[in-house]
Length: 369
Image 1 (cartoon, rainbow, N blue to C red):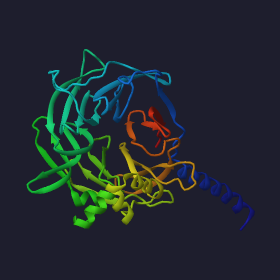
Image 2 (spheres, rainbow, N blue to C red):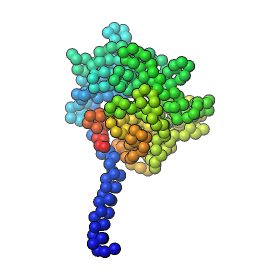
Image 3 (cartoon, rainbow, N blue to C red):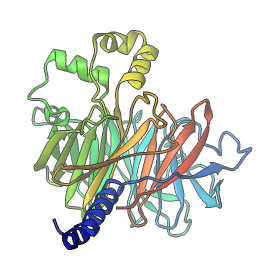
Image 4 (cartoon, one colour):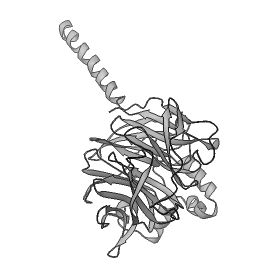
């Protein structure tokens, strides 16, 4: 090889290395901004047992709290959150109608909000008030008799991650037409878990791992992504046509949960031991969100000497795994509530301090594609 040829190849090699490094580091989650609640809030003002969170287009943060049985709104002032109004603890116009077990919620930029009360077994649908910017006006409600773990609205369809039976078939994902209340099935139980059929033994294993499912949609509203916490992911159309069904990518950080004999045995008789085993040896999906071209799963796994216990995986809508990155400073364990601001590419996490179960805060992560 001549000196001239070497002089031409060397810059190309350097450029290729830079491009490869740039690709490898394309998904990088920088340290978050931490937002804390105003000190000395009363028990009625601060979160006690929050179950979900969402952010409106003008920055109002809403938290659904099961313990306070309320919808609470907060404003961000610098790095502090202050109450925006008193708790909204009623549904409908009759003050006798009180929440009992408010939990999961969803919100769209037109001011629509849905809230599942797991104890009342109802999903309540609201429209944001035009007179009181921090309040929501009740519109209607839907039956939710067999649980719900996530909600997502696409147009006039409310997508429910929960169980229902239609024409003798059990489904784990379905749509409610907001105008007519008609139900449309989307995913059966075996499809949710990525198995051919459910036997008594497989049910034991699934119950030991957990049944929580998460739902999100592409920015254009054409696709849904449903993820079971046990590691199975399904990409489908809003009408229920499955486009891709696969397990989360095994990496050096992600280990798919396995229903060991001890996990099955301890699920009911010793939940603390079961939880310890899960946190120390397995990875669980904790959230999912999407943009126009990609979707992301957040999972929590055993640290194994690593500085983080949470990671994020990036996929395209064909189900191709693209990248993985650490999610810094996300506390270990506990219920994690996420909200993704698609417009600004910001992921919000409502978390509890690892060693203080009464101290909540919000972390803001900037996600760049």
